[in-house]
Image 1 (cartoon, rainbow, N blue to C red):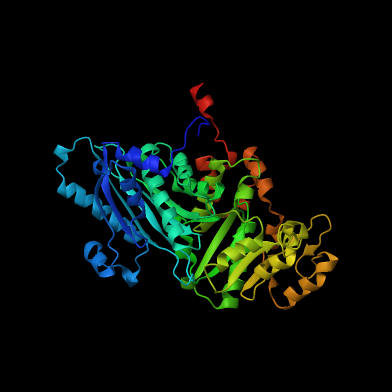
Image 2: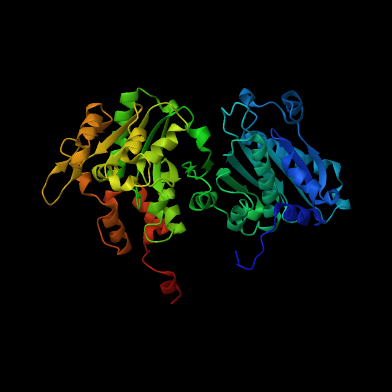
Length: 479
């Protein structure tokens, strides 16, 4: 955004929309009052914009309009999309398009629950807009999931109203720049009031938008701590995926994913499933990449990011992108969604970092506070060995050396099986390092292909990933 660009207040944005004679649509808000449309009524000139405003608050009445929901769950993405599409269909049905050739129709909707009187729940919900960028074009949709952090329902409602205005304004004025649109969602809203942990763009205006890159913006800009993608590259709501599940995760750069990563994952997961007696239906496995890792070269290379996620997706894995530099934050994040078992696979070097006090200088309780989170009774670390090629020594939990003042703690965690060694690892895979493979790929050296999982080398070559160059460059072809 240019330094000269003036940020409008929510009232100014609502008035701008109201004075735009081409924008016309409906507001349907469930669960937190009519906070968004109120902004447009108060701004003035709303008769040019608002076709209808409603709040089908009663569930029976809401069901009569939009249909019943499975398990009577109303604060869902499915409910929101039903609302958006139903309301647009009513506009199209009731207004003769020939009489409104220049109108761009829209429907805005939200279905949310704010904090209750006893403050035992966290307010959250779904917010979205279905709209036309051009009057003769199909409809676009922007859908997002939000979590409120204020401890007062009235403040949460006010935040929702501002967010709704920002979303509607962004849809009509920033649809050609989705990154700017995402940034604008927080105008006049403090990030400690609101978290956006999923966003999805679809429609003709966003034909070339990769939603994984849009979700990356959420983490990059501090709008949420983590986002998750399915193997197909679809954004997933963490709460839906992880709720009351057993979770097994492995962290890495995956640049590219290698046989040692998969060996650690497969053998660690096998042990985790035996330890927990869990089945696939109540288990979620995640490959985690941190923002710090993506920024290792000083900035985030989006092509490199997509290369990593695409390869993991090809192998069939869910991917989580997080702001969690320290492992205890990752475990604490999972604990927000589940009280089931949590397993984390890591290498010896990573465990040594866990036991390094310098990483916890900003915690009031220091390393003990971190240990209280990462070594909970339902958490187990599965340790993958390290082969020191210089000494020939194989490092595992038995001969790992931690600082003198932490030795007794380490022994305690090991004795209580909070730290266990991964068995059945492949010794020859311990010589594989991603950085060496990446160097070979870039310099077109031989022998890296067999160090990757089946099918990955072919994908890298075919798509020119991780700096791989085909035999003829484009310049050479033109010459």
